Every structure is written in structure tokens, then in C-alpha cells.
Image (cartoon, rainbow, N blue to C red):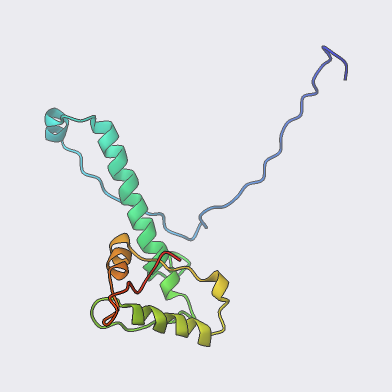
Length: 144
């Protein structure tokens, strides 16, 4: 095509992706808004409501995807409730020994160790990283 030539017009063709099956119920959250809140608010109410709505939906989805006890057809079935999931009973606070016990479960199930990922809340990780050996006082968990 030469300089100043006509650019051909092409109608793009897009494929559809179904993100939520038609049988699955959608996630619903309630965020309360009163006229009193609108009158007495010192912050931008629309921004505060948006942030609250996003945080509420994210927390609801996180809970459903990880520990939801649905049937997987009409409601979300979380990862922890899939067939073949292993569990480990822990009495009291999580310890480094509990992590080793969980790791042993994965090894006995012949799970590829390169695919393992630990999920935990930040405060749990911090409390685990503070644990020290009884005799030497060295930290049990290091950055590596």
C-alpha cells in the first residue's frame, strides 16, 4: 500500500467467553447507605461506598473460592472442599512442626513439590517467623 492509500476496513470478529455458567448464582453483598451518612459525611461518599463495595465483594469471593461449601453447579465449591483434598488437624496455634506435617502429607500423595504454594495471613507468617529454637535461639524460619 502506497503513501496516502486507503486502509482496508475489516469488521473484527470476537469470540465470547462465558465467565459464569448460567447455572451458577451470582455473588451478592449489601452495603448500607443512609441519608444521615450523606449529610454528615466528611469524605467523598461515592469513593467510600465504592471502596467498601469492592472490598466486600473481594472478601466474599475469596471466602467462596477457598472454603466455599457449595455444590459447584449453582453455588461455588471452594478449593478446600474439592474431592481428594487432604486435611491436617491442628490443636492450638500453628507451629513449624505443623508445616512439616502438612509438607509430609503432600509428599506421601506424590504431589510435585515445585507446584506447592503456602497460603496464610500475614500475621500468621510474622508469628511463625518469630519462633526460635530452644537451645540456640536461632530463628526457625528464614527468608530462603
